[in-house]
Amino acid sequence: MSEHTGITLKTASLRALTGRCPCCGEGKLFRSYLKQVENCSACGEAFGQIRADDAAPWLTIILVGHVFLPFAFMVNVDFLPTWAAMGLWSGLFAAISLAVLPRAKALFIAILWQTRAPGYQPVELG
Image (cartoon, rainbow, N blue to C red):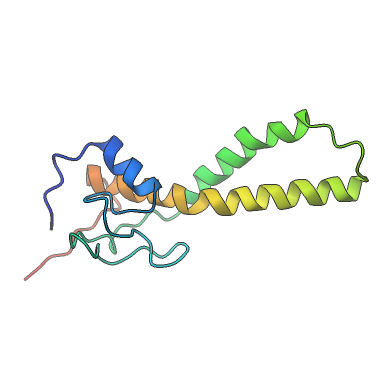
């Protein structure tokens, strides 16, 4: 396991938000949309045991519901029929949610990794 004490929480978080390894910033953090890699391909740091669980959907709901949703009330779409406006907003918020969710998970993985908080379970090599 790599030594991470020199890496700040800010650096680890920014690396993760770009989809990169919080430790080295080189390897990918996800192998698919929300599946994190077991180990970084560049530095070998283990991420498979980190469980972000419900934190990422929680943050996504908070951001979309409390930050982006008020913009829907500020934009006048009276030129559209009600069904079209509802479809437009639903599609937009679904797209925003799908864009935010992996970044939220990456952020929580980086926080759990950097702080070694509960949810981080190091692999015993033996």
